[in-house]
Length: 151
Image (cartoon, rainbow, N blue to C red; front, side, top):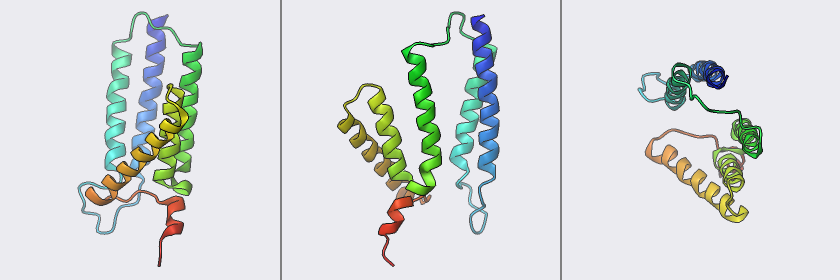
């Protein structure tokens, strides 16, 4: 029966990877359309990694895994809800605020003190935003921070 659990999960994750990759291919083409690295590149890479990892679960399932319906299972459900809310909040709140809240909440759920967890989230969101915006020249949504722009 435990082989069956991994295979079901693997197939569901392959479906998710395909849907995620397809959604990324629907992003608007940047002006000029000749860039090798565009807004869909990172999501496509994530979709490929997810698909390969999921295929491994289908082909080589773990013989003695059990669905974690204890505290661990509840924490996994909380993590999924946080990630779904993160995806929905990216545009309205912006990358930095959404990332700070998501990373902070996940760190807190893993045992960090709330202040340290949310400071970690804020630092992580800011650093990744700066890397994407200035080093990679890929824009991330500003959301609430766009209200601070002058001009």
